[in-house]
Image (cartoon, rainbow, N blue to C red; front, side):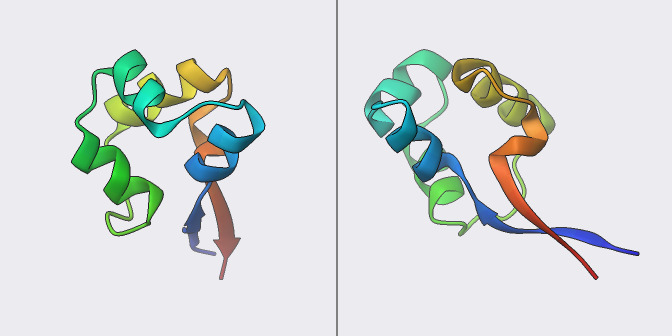
Length: 71
């Protein structure tokens, strides 16, 4: 059984926490273009380092940054 990400949840997490993408960029130190690519799912896989840093800002587990589908 393969598990793959189908949607990045950064936009939802930002909305839930009433946070802007700019605030996330400032808190993580990750480039605006990178955060934007993750948010729009143009770059499907985050690096583990990025996922951990972003997850820490949101207070979630790195796997909670995506909606997953199992095939």
